[in-house]
Amino acid sequence: MEMDPQAGDDIISAALKVLCTPDPHDKAARTEAIVRLWDDGSITMPPPGTAYTVPDRPARESGKVQLVAARDVPKRGKGGSLASRQAMLHALVHIESSAVDLAWDCLARFGAADVAGAGYQLPRQFYSDFIAVAADECRHFRLLEQRLEATGSHYGAMAAHDGLWESAAATAGSLAARLAVEHCTHEARGLDVLPQTIHRFRSNGDAASADLLQNVIYAEEISHCAAGVRWLKHLHRLAHDHDWEQQQAQQQQAAGSQQQQAGSGQAREEQQAASAIPEWAVEARRFPSVELWFHSLIRRHFRGPLKPPFNDAARAQAGFGPEWYLPLAADAEDSAAASAAADSSGHACKGQQQGPAHTAAVACLERCNMTARHM
Figure 1 (cartoon, rainbow, N blue to C red):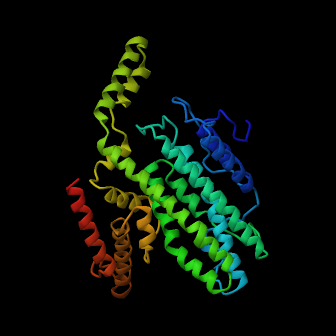
Figure 2: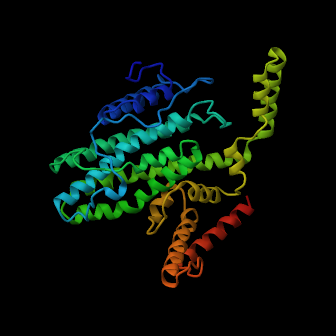
C-alpha cells in the first residue's frame, strides 16, 4: 500500500495511513498532506459499503520513547530548574504526539459511512473538524519539540506514560464515550492546568515556552475541546430528533425485499437487525439533556476523579458550563468524604460530609434538569 496520502484516497484510508506510520515526524508530514488534499477536494468522503480495519494501536517508532505506568513517570517538579522545565516540555511533546493519533483514530474508527450498529452517517463537517484538530496537534508537536531541543534535550530522553491511548482503547466501541472522555474531559483538564504551566515557565525565565503555550497552543486547545462538545451535542440531538421508526421501516422493507428475492437466512437476520434502534441512541434518549448523558458517560468510562480547580472561562469558550462538570466533581468530593469518614470511624458513611463543590453541583444539576423539562 502506498503510504503517502494521494489524490483519490477517501478520508478513512488516508487517516489509516497516518495511524500506520511509526515515526512522529512522518505522521506530521502525512497529516499536512491530507489537509492540503482535503481542502482542494482531492480526498473524498468515505464511500458507503466500504469495510476498513482500524488498528487496535497506532504504529509507534520502536524504542523512541520508553512507556511506563503513570505512577512510574518521574516527578516533573514546578519548573524551578532546567531539568524540571525539560521534563515539563517532554511531557507536553508526548501529549501532542499522542493527540495526533487520537484525532486520526477518532475519524477512522467512527467516521466510516456504515459504522456497524451506529445508524448514522456523520456530516462532512465532522471530518473537517477532526482533520483540523490533527493538523493543530502536529504543529504543536513540532513547535514544542523545537523548544525541548532548544533547552538541550530531545523527545525520547525521558520516560512517558500511555494514559491517553489507554482511554482511547477503552472507548473504542462508542463515539459518544470517546468524545466525552478524550475531548470533554482530558482536553478540558488540559485547559484547567495550562495557565499554571504557563506561569511556571514564565516565572522561571523561560518566556519562549510560556509565549508558545499562551499565544499559540492555548486557544487551539480550546477549539479541540469545543469539537468534542459540539459533536456530543450533535449525537444527543440526533438520538432525540431523528425519525428512527421511519428508518427502521425502510431498512425492514429493504431486508424483506432481499429475502423475497434470495430466500436467504441472511436476509432474515438483516431484517431482524434493522428492527432495533441503535444502542447508543437508546441510551441517549434516556437523558433529556446532553449534560445528564455526559455525566453518565463519564461515570462509566472515565477512570479517576474529576477535581477542581476548573478553568471556567476556557471551558465556557469551548461550549460547556459548570453544569457539565461540577456534578462530577461532587462525586469525587463525596467519595473522598466517605473515605475519610471510613478512616476515622472504621466504616464508610458516604454522603454525611458534603462540601462546597457538592452544593454548587446540586444547584447546577437542578438548572440542568429544569432546562431539560422545558426542551
